[in-house]
Image 1 (cartoon, rainbow, N blue to C red):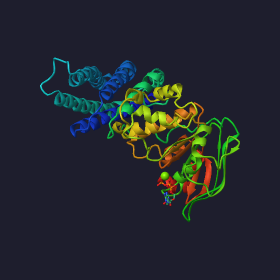
Image 2: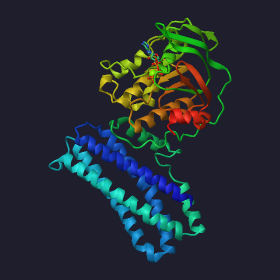
Image 3: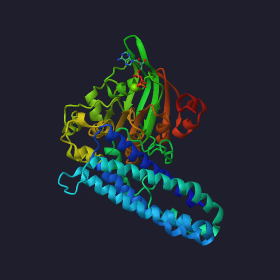
Image 4: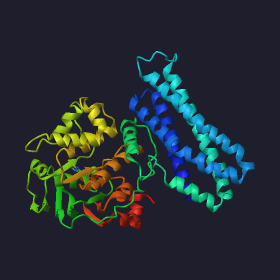
Amino acid sequence: MHALDIIQGEHRSLLRIANSMDAVADAIEAGTPVEDGFFTALFEYAHEFMGGCHHAKEDEYLFAAMRARVPEKMELLSRQMEHEHVLGVERLKTLQQLHHALTSPSETTKPADPQTAFLSALRNYTVMLRKHLLVEDEELLPLAREALLPEDWAAINAAFENNDAPLFEAQATARYDQLYHMITSVAPEPVDLGASRIGEFSPARELPRSKTPLLEVRDLESCYGRIKALNGLNILVHEGELVALIGANGAGKTTFLRTLSGVQPLAGGSIRFAGQDISRLRADRRVRAGICHSPEGRQVFGPLTIEDNLRLGAYALPGKTNASELERVYEMFPILHEKRHLSAGTLSGGQQQMLAIGRALMGSPRLLLLDEPSMGLAPLLVEEVFNVIRTLRQQGMTILLVEQNAFAALGIADRAYVLETGHIVLSGTGQALREDETVRAAYLGV
Ligand SMILES: Nc1ncnc2c1ncn2[C@@H]1O[C@H](COP(=O)(O)OP(=O)(O)OP(=O)(O)O)[C@@H](O)[C@H]1O
Ligand SMILES: [Mg+2]
């Protein structure tokens, strides 16, 4: 009955779509501008996901088997569900047309009030979708569990296991990935597709690619006046590792990253990077050496264009802007490319975070320092930021990640350190720390 789990998982994804449609309808009514690309991608995704993979398989395998086993109970119910599948596709098409009428100035067949027409169709659609899912989950699937035989399940399981990976599942295809990226990068702030996958990332299983420490921090101290903010820190980061640093407010996480990148003076101890002692090296020299920092609070330059913000990331490099790096950043964040001539201040919080990461990537990092990249973002965007970090790690980048979202950070980290008032109190693999009782109580809220 494995297919049942898959179907229920897909239903949860569909509910997230319904939730996000409702949230965006609310946002539009409240006057928040929503980019056209958001709906275009969302509708396309819904079309492909439901039409191309979910519904067809339910109709062909699940409902058909149920009608064969329990015709008296199933005939009506499954026909109703099938009918709603067809209806759903039609309504989605209508929605796309209404959206087109709303957004294309040249459209001649506009309804009198295109926005109201679109929003009310959108709300009707989500009502229908929720109802449909409720009936399936509460009536149809329990019946299936009871009535179907192992040989029925064999065929149904095979069909669903072979699914064209929906957007939210681990094996999402490139096509879904692309749509997903589009949806998340243009989603308005209040949207929440739910971030249940955060923290469920499978822990990085491979061992670090190399045993050579890229970064070796010994007995590091740093002070603000007479107050010691870092009190003898020892941290190692190996080549290719993703290391997380978690800790409460004021523990010294930001101070540590600033000391590494050379903008905060070091009062004691040493920092070795790629075999060199860089403890006394100037900040711009450290960027040249490959230590690139995406700071807390993003700190993008609002009045400058997005492209100029990115170019600043390469400022300390001898050849200045590296065209291929710029291309790589745009490839990773298509929304930045699309908006490259606009001022950075026009970007949403999530997009500014992408810009801050993109700017750090412009320095061709050997070690990427990320200070609370998920701070203040809606859950959907948090998920996207973590996807980006995971992707960078998979591409072989060495990353030191400071996060308030400890659960998610430990979920993707190879190893992690826990910092308390200026010193390390615990370290271990991300997985081990996630299972550690004190960490769970102090940082995971469980
Ligand atoms: N510019 C400053 N002047 C004086 N003290 C500072 C300064 N910046 C930070 N501190 C102090 O140093 C300690 C460490 O601060 P830091 O910002 O590094 O913590 P953090 O772990 O990054 O916290 P958060 O989770 O809030 O970002 C805190 O006690 C803080 O009050
Ligand atoms: Mg901080």
